[in-house]
Amino acid sequence: MAFNDLLKQLGGIGRFQKAQVTLVILPLLLMASHSTLQNFTAAVPTHRCRPPASANLSRAGEPEAWLPRDRQGRPESCLRFTSPQRGLPWPNGTEANGTGATEPCTDGWIYDNSTFSSTIVTEWDLVCSHRALRQLAQSLYMVGVLLGAVGFGHLADRLGRRKVLILSHLLMAASGTCAAFAPSFPVYCAFRLLSGMAISGIVLNSMTLNMEWMPIHTRAYVSTLAGYVYSLGQFILAGVAYAVPHWRYLQLLVSVPFFVSFIYSWFFIESARWHTSSGRLDLTLKALQRVARINGKQDEGAKLNMEVLRSSLQKELTMGPGSASALELLRRPALRRLFLCLSVLWFATSFAYYGLVMDLQGFGVSIYLIQVIFGAVDLPAKLVGFLAINHLGRRPAQVASLLLAGSCILANGVIPQDQSIVRTSLAVLGKGCLAASFNCIFLYTGELYPTMIRAVAALLPETLGHPLPDTVQDVENRWAPAERGRDLPPATRRGKAQRQQQERQKQMVPLQASAQEKDGL
Figure: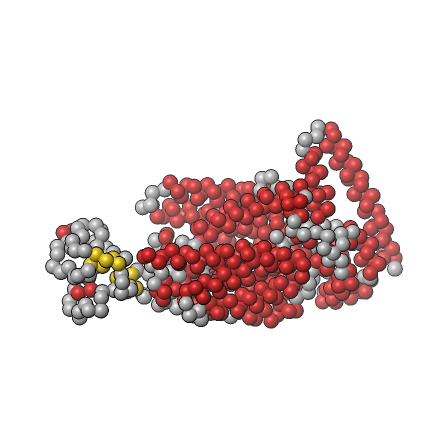
């Protein structure tokens, strides 16, 4: 609790916290734009084979004469006749228009540009035999997200949250802008992979930096605020995509603002918790005194010195710089269990969430309307999730949100395809539950991992009201005894809990005495 007490002493939620949290969260408005951008930049318009160059297209009915039709009378998208088939009957629109030989669309396709003036699909003909390439672009983006989580997470624990956040903003701005000018599909995919890496760096370090500067009782509020900013970004994406139907301009529009966030991110203050865990108590003191000045608590900041910090943060200083790494996730029993549980949660939530939001055209309604609906459902879902997190705890909120989401998705699998309203309603409800799950898991991850490896459900421990762990040993001391205690008789568990409480009280006596001495001074 020592660091949390220091934050309260220096203003708690002061001008610094309000300003930095706002500026850190602001770029999340465009997070939805990049994560689900390909719903619009890679939209597949209605298309049909282009007739050969020798075809007389000025002749009435000539373009249609090259198009085979299915049993519903709809033109085939990926085949054309080898020669025009004219004057053949279409009784009630149920018979194929001609029996001639067909061939692939060797001369390209004609696209319906009424909704999208240009997409990567229409520019590089990612349809028919090449349709898998469209999914490849999004898959590479998600690979980038994974690589960024591993790479930038490791760098953040070694170099600091602020430096990696600055780098991530620059990478996002540069890669997103370059993708807008990509001359070929492979180049576009390469820049999308880099964008995915940058997104991970921004998300992980934004949440970590904010959480490490906020008092305990405000963490759920900050996590929910970030979630609402992301949801607002979904509305922005729908409006911007509707106003800018050309994929290159849309890509550019959602990428250039990151140059602004790159510039102002230089003014962020590095996490004092990270400085302490790295053994740089001098930088911790400078950061805390700077925060005190911004919050108008100069007198409290002046009381801080190296001796006060050494006595208040003695526990954190026992773990020297570089004494922990991501390998601790597998080496320590308590951390290993947390890591495995959280990995399952992240996979389940992300897999289901992106499975729903990355196929908006499949719902059979306006892609812009379904984007707005998917954004709107987040508002009540995240409010309910926030109330559950604060009043019931993290674990019940996480379990309930995933159970409800899974039930909606499973039910959707057995609903007939023609009942589009029911299927869409279940998908919207499931998406809302997954959004609430994301809010909870972001908060959960930051609260469970110690400071030194922070930038990496039913079996998880409860964290409501607990201080952030700063060292690996904190996690072992807090959760490993609880696991071992499950196998003890009730009387033994009660005795052990009483002894632990007495030890905590003994440890608080020197801190209280030190606080009284400072007050006397």
